[in-house]
Amino acid sequence: MQRIIKNEQIIDETWHLLPKEETLDGLSNCDDVIVPLHLWIDHAHALKARDGGLGIWLDSNEEVEEIADDLEHFQVIALNFPKFTDGRHYSSARLLRERYGYKGEIRAIGDVLRDQLFYMRRCGFDAFAIRADRDPEDALQSLKDFSVRYQAAVDERLPLFRRRQG
Image 1 (tube, rainbow, N blue to C red):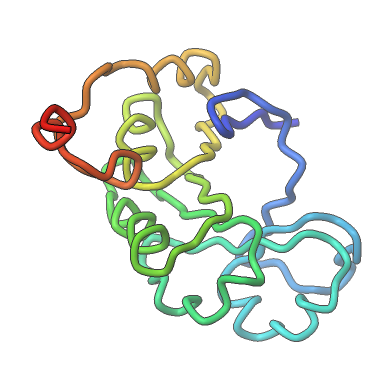
Image 2 (image 1 turned 30 degrees about the vertical axis):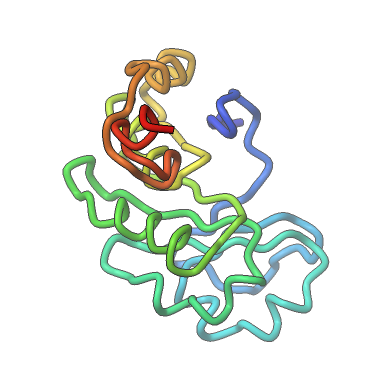
C-alpha cells in the first residue's frame, strides 16, 4: 500500500487512482476512486451516482477550466507531474484555490520529489504522492525547509513587509 503525505502527516493511501486506459467495467460502487478526465467527460452521470468517494486527475496538458463547473463533485483533485521539470500544475493549483475557491484536497501525483513540496504547498497543494523510490519521511521534512516566506501565496496572503506593518 502506498503512503502519501496529507495535511503534513504520512498516511496510508485509501483512494484508487485509475489509469488512463481504465473503463468503468467492473468498477466497484463503493470504492473511493480518482478518475482520469476523459472518464469524467464520458461518464459523469454514472460516476456521480456511485456511493464511493469521487476524485479526478488531470494530466499536465489538461486545464482546470475543463472541470471548473463540476468542482463540487470532487473530494480530491490530483494533478499529475509526468516529470519533475514540468511545472504547469503549480498554476493549476493556484487557480483551483484562488479563482475557483476549491476547498477539497489537491494532490500532487507522478514524478513528485522532496524539493518540490514546500513550493507546491505554497500554491495550494495539501497532499503529495511521493515517487515510489523516495522516502516519504524525508519528503515530509522538506515542508519545514524555510521558516520565513517573503512573497504572498495561497498559504500566506500577505507579503512579509505587509505582515510586519500589522
